[in-house]
Every structure is written in C-alpha cells, then in structure tokens.
Image 1 (cartoon, rainbow, N blue to C red):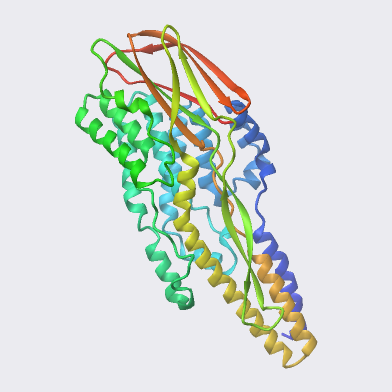
Image 2: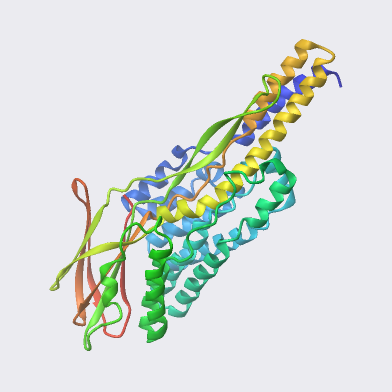
Length: 439
C-alpha cells in the first residue's frame, strides 16, 4: 500500500474516531429530568422507555446506567419491588464489570473509555444497597434491610485498596508514570453516617439494643474519620434515638433533596518531546460537577405535636466526589499512557513518510495529531438520579395517627411543601417516613 493510500485511509479513520468519541448530551435526558425534578416519577419512567432515549442514552453498554436510573426513580415512585430488582441488577452488573474483559480493556486503551461498558462509580455501588435497604423496610422485611446495610460496610472496607493492583499494572507498563502526582489516592471514606443511621433504626426496631448502640458510635466515628465529607455536625436528634420514654413511640423522618453530581469533560494540553505538530497532545478527562439544590433547610410539622427541623446527616454529593478521587488518578494515568503512545506512533509514521516525501511526512504528522485528539474523549457517563443530600430527624409522640407536613426552604423562602395524612405511629415499631424533593 502506498503512503498516499495510507493517508487516505487515515483520514477515513478520523470519522471512526469521531463516532467512537460521541456521547449523549444532557438534552437527551430533558424529559426524564423534568419528571424527576417535578415529582412526576411515572412520567419520568415512561420517558425512559422512549425508543430514542433507549438508543442514545441507554444502549447495551450503558446497562448499568439504565438499571441505576430506573431503580432510583422507581424508589421515589414507591415501586419498592421493581426498584429492588433494578438496583440489585445494577449491583450485579457493577460487580461483573470490575473484572472487565480483555477485549474491552484493549479497545479502551487504543481509543477511550467510552467504548467500554459503563462500570459504575463507587458511590453508586454503595448507595444501591442504602436505597435497597429502604425498599426492604417499606416491604416489611427488616432482615433484608439489614443485609443490604451489611453490604455497604463490606464494600467500604474493600474500597480503600481497590485500585492498587490496577495502578501497578499501568505503571509497570509505563515506568515514566510511576510516582505521578495523579496516582490514585487512598479513599478517605470508610464509614457512611447514613448507612449507620438506618442500621441503628433497623436494629432498634428488632430489639437489638447492643448493635444499635454500636451503630450510633460508628455514626459519630464517621464524622471524625472523614472531615472533608462531613463538614456539618452530627444531627442533634441522634442523642434521643435510643431513649424512647415508656408508653411513647418515635417518629423518624428522612428526606432526600437535590440531585447527585454529573460529569463534564476537561481538556489539558500535554507537552511532548516530539517534532511539530506532535509536540503537544490533548488529555480529555472527566470532572465531577455538583448540581445545586433549591433546598437549604427543612421543617416538619406534626399535627398535635411540636415542629421539627431536619438536619443534614450525609452530603451524598461530597461522598461521590471523595470516592471518585481514587479512580480519577487511575483515569489520568491510563489516559496519559494512551495519549503518549498515540503521539509516539503518529510521530514515527510521519518520520518514516518524511524520508520519502517531506510534504507527505508533514501531512501524516498533522493527520496523526488530529486523529489522536479526536479519539480522546472523556467518559462523562454517570447516573443522574441519586439524591444530593440526606436529612434526618426524630420525635417522641404518643402512639396514634398523625398528619405530617414537610416544608422545604431555600434562600428565597418556601420552595416546596408536602402533606401526608394517616401516618400511623406505633410503640415498639420503626415508624420511618421518607420524603423526597429533588429540586
């Protein structure tokens, strides 16, 4: 094959690289987002089944995203069994994705991570169990709820050294990257206050006071161990969770607000010790971006009882950011190694062509640079419908039936309000009311 034919084929390859790098923009989620933010969860689920959405947003390689998004929206809609099925399938697929096939790894090393099946973020894996525990509670299965919480703690114990092996493989193959400032960091999140809170409530309701006390202590420890995540003090209502007066019942309220972070692409220019135009290469990296919430405080009004202000127990957005740090270092190492390899290959081809034709050599160098840039696209896939924050509170009441009104406030005043009637509060039982405002 002549060099000129090779040049033509290289140009054609650019279009292939463009196709591989394409990703769905936020507009593809517009109708689903609108349903979620307005609380029209049935409409959001119907929008997910639109053929264009399934094709562009949830193709087979995004199966985990589909299961996560659908499972969370079903949870908000009160479809507890359906939500459990989808979240459990997402968890199974995430576990399988951890042992990614060789073919996918080769493809992602040549092109970019978008060619791979989406593997799931660590925080997504953790919160599938948190919300599944609530699904089990709503179905009256406290043992199932506790199993889900134990899964959270097992995953947190494993998370601390999850990426050590992967980092070693990359640096062994690319010694110049060893000791990089972007090397995967240890995850400074080993205890979830929200998971401990739910476990405390579940154990309390089963009469297991010893384990409930352990969970309460571990909850306080979570704040000490991860100050970058828990910038707020522990909720003051925790002090009374294990001291319910005889003859009274406790109403616990949990509210989820806002939405979890999304990702955007950030480009960094990397200087290369190669002849122009291959003396620069573009690194395309994902960056997590928090989505602002309209809710900054929450008030609960119980009929015939005092008012209660819910307090922040866990900023899920900060957990997402913290757990992403370890994998981000791995992404940088892999992207850098891949980009350097492409640039060296492009420069070598251009040098070989230049020996026969100076102009053709320059053309090959330019084509190689463009091809390398176009084939680099950050993987900005992430689930969109986990909440951003979790708030809790508790109040002791006489057993009975109550109406509960929850008011959400933002900087401009009342943002949203919801009233529920006929909430039964029973002594010796877990009376947990869950509310959602995803604005």
